[in-house]
Length: 302
Image (cartoon, rainbow, N blue to C red):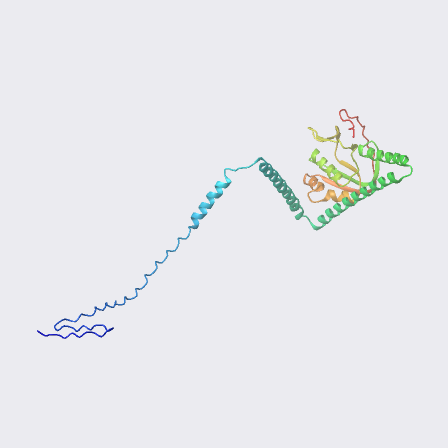
């Protein structure tokens, strides 16, 4: 057995402890295991977003039609909208009729010859000049009535002049002046009352101021009828052919109006009749009518 000498430690010094023989030294604390580096994980690939399905154009159109149909039918119209729709329909119908009639008139003129078109243009110019002249005369008469110092005398003169003019139109006064004489020969008896009436209307449209057919004065209430045995009656009087129209008016306006394409002369010739026009510087319309007082018509108060 070994004895160990123990020496007292110096004051302030820590005592030293010698290890005992055979004593096992205290083992140092075991070092903590160094963690192995974890390999970086690759980021998981993001899931690719699936493309949104494109809308089917056919389905879209079908859905659009259904929505449009649902919006339009059944119609929800107010009273005001219905009135506006009717007015627009009437306006469109009137415009369509006017355009169609204009196109028909243009199609007739399209096939006309150049000299016929020139004649029609001259006739229109003459009508315009005649209307301008009438307007100037009326304005002159108005100025005289307004500016005359003796308005009563001027008014009487204008009244007498107007009565004479109305007498010519009414057929109670003879008329004379430049004009034409239209003779219609109808050996086949194909000329009817409506053809004579068309001739009269064409002459009036061209500016005829006084007309006489054979010995019958034409007035505002003149009428034509066909006889069952043949022939024509004018105002109840039988008129035999040849039919002779004595017309007071401007010959330069009356003659072209009868000779236009598809006009009076062409129509009569298509029915085996012959029309002859003679221009004269002075013709006399001397047939008169017996004026009748109206049975029902009365002057209306202003």
